[in-house]
Structures are given as C-alpha cells and as structure tokens.
Length: 476
Image 1 (cartoon, rainbow, N blue to C red):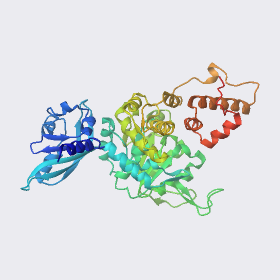
Image 2: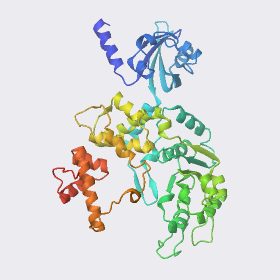
Image 3: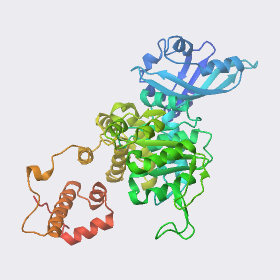
C-alpha cells in the first residue's frame, strides 16, 4: 500500500464513530484510531506509554477488567464481550468489543483486530431503529407508552450499579417499589425489569393511579359485571389487574390510591385473586407487581394516609433511582439519545458540540431526565436549520424550565395580580397577551415561541391575530 493510500486509510479510521485497535500476540496495542483517544481521554503520547499501550498490562494494573484479544490468541476464533475500562480521569467506561483474528501464512494468529463501541451509543442506535418501525397508542388509563419500551440509557457508576442489582432479581416474582423524584425514569426502569424477566412475552399493564378518579378506581382496577351500576357497559368490563394476567402490573404513583381501597389491593396482591364489582365469583390472576412513587411512603404511613401492611408488601425490593444531578455522567448519552430521536422526528441531522454538552452537564436538572428530554426537543426546533452542530444552549431554555421547579411565594402574599377594574376573563386575556408578547420578543419567531410555551403553531397564530401582536410589541 502506497503512502497516500495509508494516509487516506488512517483518515477514514479516525473518522469512524467507533474504536478500532490492532493488538499483537504479547498484548501490545500497535494501532488505535482517534475514537480510542477521545473516549478514554488520552493524548497520543499517553496512549504509547504503559499501562495504556498493552492490554495485558492494563488488566494486571486494574485499568481494564479483562482482555477480549487474549481469547482470540488462545482459541484462534473471533471473540466478543463487555469490558469495563477506566479512562484517564478515573471514570469507568463500559464498552462492547468484537475482536477478529488475523492469520499469518502458516495459520497462526498474528494480530487481533478489535472493533469497540460504548454501551450508550449502541443502545441509542438500537432504540432509534426500533422507534422508527413501531407505532404506539394510548387510550384511557391503560397506556401503551413508547417510553415504556426503552432500555435505560446510562453511563454513570450509580446507574450501572442499580441495573446490575436489578438483573439479580428480574426473574423473581417479588414486588419491587421504585422510588425517586419526578422525571427520573421510573417507568423506563419498570419496563426494563419486565422485558428482562420470564414474563416478557406477556403484557405489561401500566396504571397511572393519580389519573383515575377515586369514584372509578375500584371498577377500573378490578373490573365489573354487567348491570353493576348506572352507566356500566352492557357486557361488563375487564379490570386492569386482570389484563395483566401472566405479565406485569405497574402501578405508577401508588401513593394516590384511595385509603379505603388499599386493603382490597393488598388482598389481591397476596392471594392473586380478584372479584369484579357486582360479582360473587373470584378469579385467579398471575402477575408480578411493580409500583412507583415520588412520595415518601414511610412518612405517609406515619400520617395514616397509607396502610403499613400494604407498604411492607410492596417494599420487598426497594429501588431508589438517583436524580440526574447526582449522576451527571448520564447527561451526555441521554442528550445524544434524545437528539437522535428528535432529529428523526423533525428530519434534522444535528449534533451537540462539546461546549453545548458541557453546558448541559453543568445544569442542575431539577426536572431530571424528563426536563432534559424537553430541553433537547426545544433545542432541536429553535436551532438554525442550516446549522449542523449546536454550539450552545440558550440560557432562556434553562430559565424557563426552572420556573416550574423553584419554590416561590404565593403571589397574593407579596403582591396582587388581579386588576380590579377588569372581569376574570379580561384579567386572563391581559396576562395571556403579556406572556405571548414577551415570548415573541425574546424568540423573534412564532414557531420558537410556541415551542417554548408548549402550544401548537396554529394556536399561537390565532392568538397573535387576536391580540394584534404581529409586530411582537412588548407590553413593558
């Protein structure tokens, strides 16, 4: 191969979105591309020094947990597996490696050629492809949510340990209680548990307990027979617990279940039998229960708003999901994953610069993963369509999100927002006009303002016409 061809090949390999290594029999890494340096935060000269330059030395020093290439030299066959390697900053990076043998003229393994990628990147690619070919729907309290079909995207030590612990118990039928702040991803974890268990072929039924009116809770959860009450369906109705037969019942916001029905739920969980409203017959049901809450159930028990016996029955395996601010290593893979989804949705091909990623990592994320997802969507929409790389995150996006999480005084305690000369409708219109005007002045675009305010483009167009805001006039 000529010099020009060698330079071209090296350039090609350096621009791949995965790592490439070549290892010789003694474990020396005789070739590596730019991805390796970037991922493990090494300079070219640092990579040439021990223990980085030899996989066997790296394993012996604790820098890596195992060597895939060693299997290749021992067996003469391709080998693959998961590795844990500590980068230059001391952070553990989890990768998947595929090594292929390269033979000399006598059939001996001369080199091991390795292709390497991070777990988070592989997960993102997989779920982007899955989401592209599947359609999802939701109806009533029974939801088939696309979020429930995702596997957790993570890189942090905290989430790695959490997932490792979950894998140990996924095939047991013991109840699991997921705890954590709103937006931390409890639904995604519940889905991961279900899909990893022996019940994966059966349905996972999600019940948002806070969305069901107290008067309908019993009939929705346990079902009813025909004629049980006025307005009941002619043929009766299967309850959500019954629908989970053979699979998993996920009770989200379990703290919202009315106190008077908690005893009945406890009996169903313990006996695995239900009795529809208006029926005298019991029916056996087989399900695994996963519940979730962002409230402290122990405190609710002390206040007599949650039954102690139900709490202990649900809390067999408690799992606390840390907030995003306590696992900042997950921000980058999550941001790239969401960006991939919204690139697909809005037909863009944008990427995040390192400076934009640094801004996302520095933010405190009071709204956790849900807030990150919303900000990435807004960022995808408002960034210039001609821009391929998003260089920074407008501070306004963070400020807007923070408004919903800061504790503020009740307005009436520090000033009055009511204009006494105006009716309620006129007061509402006054403030709606003001909010719209300020958003239009800041964003200078109806599309961007609509996205920031969470309304559709046709809606903001109607309101611009209604309030005569065509020139984006500020009310200040």
